[in-house]
Length: 113
Image (cartoon, rainbow, N blue to C red; front, side, top):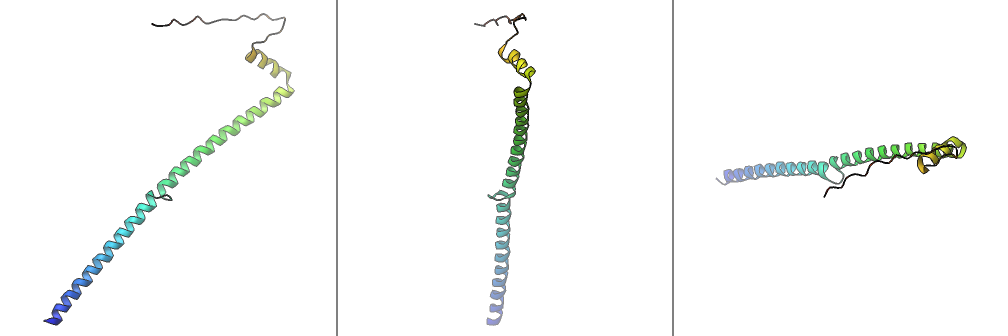
């Protein structure tokens, strides 16, 4: 009877150990999956950072395009008198002495009480 009792408790211990190993493995696997998804270096953080990089690259491209336009405008202002004249007319409302300027004002909007 002692031999059989030992075998049963040994079998139960082995079964419990196997269950504990499996449970520990599952918990470890879940922790790794959760960490790889939601951690500081997880997939979701990587996706957010990738989106931010793409947004910043688009913004840099737009700023570079603006810089090219501004550089072309600076060059035109330095070299082309017609550009200076156009800007003087559009921005400053200037005209030549031989020209008549007609200003059209829009009617004031009615204020509601």
